[in-house]
Image (cartoon, rainbow, N blue to C red; front, top):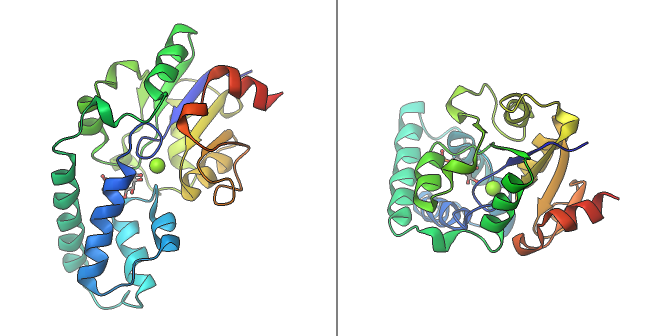
Amino acid sequence: QIKGFIFDLDGVIANTSLYHGQAWHQLADELGVTWTEDLANQLKGVARMDSLNLILKAGGKENDYTEAEKEKLAAKKNENYLGLLDSLSQDDILPGMKEFIEDLSAHHYLVSLASSSKNSPIVLKKLDLAKYFDGKVDPATLTHGKPDPEIYVRGAEVLNLKPEECIGLEDAIAGVKSINGAHETSLGIGDPKILNEADLNFNDTSEVTLENIKKAMD
Ligand code: G6P
Ligand code: MG
């Protein structure tokens, strides 16, 4: 029986995955690494340093920078990203997600956050959604980022639920892998060809309702 929902943030609750993508794209251009749709999809959901390493690897530049230089590049991307968040408001909540989260509260489901982003507190505050979460995983405390299962394992633990009692919601390949590895039900939001490992699939956030989820699980 499902008792809890574990949410990714960027690309599931808010359209901020777009801004992460823009900021990484700009850095890739500056590094002379070709930006492709495939690279963009690989980066989704992946922690900051891991993302930078994937970009450098895609350009065959994984040995060109010291750790200190990489820290600077990652900090630059983050400054850029934070600039893009300046005008973030409740209008940036993806279609239907506020209603869905409110409906979960009304039906006494437990809700936690499993975002890789160290900026998630700022984003949730700007969207005025922090109050709906019964628990949050702090990504700074993780040993391994997505696609490792750790973050979704912890997402159930903070709710005192068993993995099989939870549904995880993701827009990213790395995130779906993390949910599956944690033995929870994975709900992929986006192109089913890209998120083909998800247990359930919805093309768009507006389709994510309790009713549709119940139907899909039957
Ligand atoms: C999210 C995004 C990724 C981002 C990661 C780390 O999962 O989907 O694109 O790289 O968080 O975010 P941060 O804000 O800590 O750099
Ligand atoms: Mg995401």
